[in-house]
Image 1 (cartoon, rainbow, N blue to C red):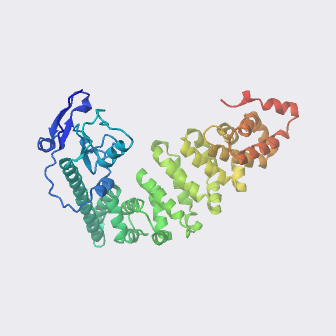
Image 2 (cartoon, rainbow, N blue to C red):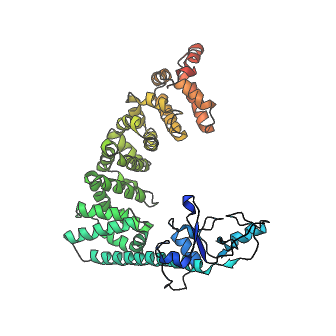
Image 3 (spheres, helix red, strand yellow):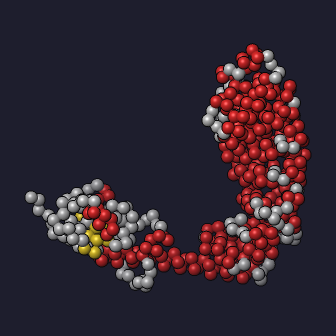
Length: 446
């Protein structure tokens, strides 16, 4: 019968992570020698709740000796077995209830089924989390205090002092959720909004927009920001600011447009649409393409904007962009083109663009079901406009075979129905024999 070492209470095993023999240290010694990061003593108000601290902090750098070997979560009520191994009380009791009378870590049979509270480890866990919690709380209070100071400063200063205060507030708000909450709770949104107007410099406007885009705005704040003078300033900054500022402008305007009280005529601006098209075509700064396309998608819901987009030549420019876009941007661009295809001028522009049909055929069953849906809708609009001319081009580009793939796939039934109707439309210009030859799957675009 094997002989076991006496129970070593309030101990910690160190050294198993390296795969070698572990050695047992007294926890107080481990703390003193810095093995657990130099946590010393309690010195913290005992009213702090350990469970709450563990949940709120959600730390990834918790010392391994605080982790229960069974659940791999931080222990809140550690108990030690006769083998010297420590576990969370609820976990080891559950282990016993399943009929196991061994130590889960060593698999040794237990010669004593009693469990002993590991008060030293509990105190150490509590102290470690308390210190972390109080440090983060202090930092949070410091951030809140500085945020309030900056808001008060912005009420009084002008010129370069205002710019510096805005830059610092922008940095703080971007980095800390507590700062964002403080700005909202202390009326900071109205302060920011008051700084936007026809005489606001672009440097001030850029910082204000950067702050506002980080905040969750309520309906009243959005309504205030939708004043024509403020929107006009955002459009000017979109056309002339840095890439970061342009992205912030698009994100802020998109959040405003989503509001139910938004009026479409506010964004029926030639300057806005030109600025957005310039942004989405700037391949040197690709991080702005998706933001620009996302705003274009949102504003293209308004008919007056669709007409204006077509008038500035957006259709041909977007079609030319398609081949170089990543999947997310591609889907946004197709959505915009599909919206433009809903008006007669847009359909004509798509038909007049020499690459439209070939590109749309190529995109069928290529990227995603949404992309297929948009491409199919655009093809239907163009072919319906001029069946004889466009259907022939589309079939020669391999459309018939692609449509058969859509019909035979497991995609949306609506897509299948639309594909069948388009296939029927395309077949009107051919005899049955010729059209069947056009439908061979070998003709699909590789």
